[in-house]
Image 1 (tube, rainbow, N blue to C red):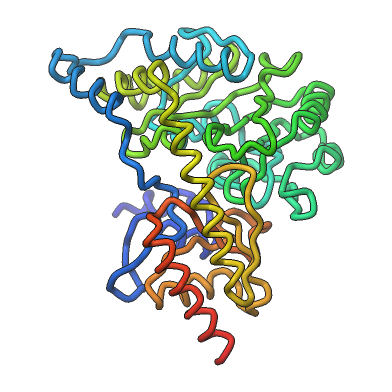
Image 2 (image 1 turned 90 degrees about the vertical axis):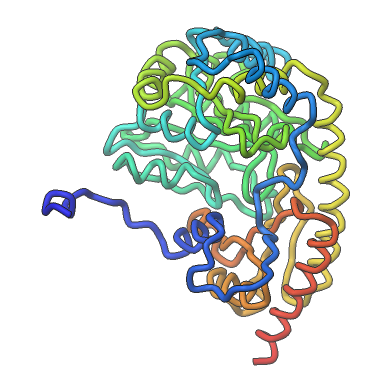
Length: 391
């Protein structure tokens, strides 16, 4: 390796983030080998619905093996946003495709965020923090408090704005804590964004996984917000398509153009089979999505019940997503220590602080495993907690 290569600046990420990456990659690393249940997984156990798979096969059989230059998927995305969220977006000028919502978020930050910008983001939260640090910008943390159901508080946002604040990031439904922002809160946030000329980056990847207590609202659909909001979304979660890697950024032309330049520099297009699978997902029957959400709700209720029976663990039924944000403060363990203890019993869970400083004292569980895996996984967690309490 050259001397210059050693000078490339690499943001220092917390130890818990590296543990989470190790868990996600499936690497055994320092963990013991054996039968491990992924009880914090973000990958649905469902197989992608048949009509979506058939659309991909059909694309291959029809010889669609070149760069995909058509606009069918972008048009389907625009139709979806108008129908579900109430805002118009131009298929050609207002949508940039991506290999999943992760890449959509990454290329949005690469295109729009500059070193020294202040970025408002909730904690615990997902990937806003890492993308902010990679750009050399400054994350300004907004506490997501349990007494507010882990929803973003507009008063906290207003109190942290400075002349360097450029972006407000929000996720709804929020991963990992499962909060759904209310329309009232989003209206307040919209007024703050307009008053301070902020760009809003809204991650709505879990939009379809909503358990009905708080209806989903897109901030881009509120008055005056379409021209200052980038909406991140994709098909991985709602349509059980994590392996297909279909995501996008949607917004006004002025913000989308630089994102499109980053995308085309690196990718040119999605794979053609994934592209046509995406069209089938958005324009095909949606009852299968509703069926999957109903199954998640039932499994989540079972998971909440099983976790509540473990001394020292506490969790509330989420408003959305398939994650159970689990408080372990009564166990006396920090989140990374708990992750290692659970791993020693053959269970993978995600450390709370990998979702930012607001995740201290928590771990992320998930109802995506099978019923049998949920039962066995929580049994192993109970055994791990008992070991900790008796040591």
